[in-house]
Length: 407
Image (tube, rainbow, N blue to C red):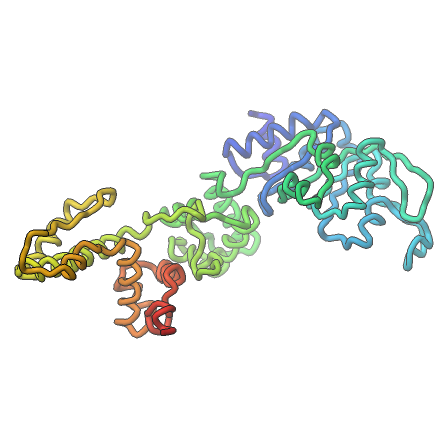
């Protein structure tokens, strides 16, 4: 563990999550062994640190280290950049030029975004990995190079192989050892550590008053998916450190700084496909209360009771309400004072989602489409209201469903 601590200090790596520590340990262990390494992980997760660790702790540490972003080089010039070219081999080749594989002879070359390589270049790279031989563009003379290749990608290469976009033999040559860099939202408390570090660095660099984070802001950080990973977190924290210098950043301020997705809401949930009502508990209680009042009024139509009395009963029963229990309203099917249509109205209890949609639409109608006032009445944030409007296809101007507004 002391060795891992030294590595983290040397390369300014912040975090203690088990997945991150395992990735660092794997990089340190493979460094002295001259094998090809494939680093995988989402964009912005910090993959670029691991080739540097492998080079610094390997036998080639005194030789050159060259990092190449394969996705940033045009397809027409990638072969020339990697393997060099001879004078006159193409228009503009006014002199011979060494490529990265020749320049880094004896050292390490890091191929970032390796999945972006054209298939023809992949064939050339495979030859280098297997025999150490390559040809300059426009040359027939075989050259040798002794080089270690570390590649990185945020693409699932096996799927790329299935689609014919990446050579299978090259995949297995590159992935002798695989290091998976965890996404930021999988690193738990590392998010708070990184946020504090970025805020402190910004304050020291630009001489601004430091910011702190409230407990609800820290919880929101853990819930957010961080699709841009560490790079996105750094950008958000620096933005807050600039515009909210000297303050304590709360949950609302943090959410307002997060980018909106297509539904008009920030992605404040760990699993995008999972629908959770945890952060909308107050709204659900109001919806349940409204449903019970409606049921009480329907019962009054059948039993001839006082609606106000049933409303009071429904309100009192909320104290014992458990979200997991399914409420089935008592219906007197033997009553001779109700016709069949009345009974059908009582039995056809609206679903929770229907009631939620109707409550949002009603709030928008009451406030003439004013989303701020509607959100206050529903006791939810405006961002949650935006998400519900999109989810249920509500008309923002009238507070009615899109299909009703068309008819």
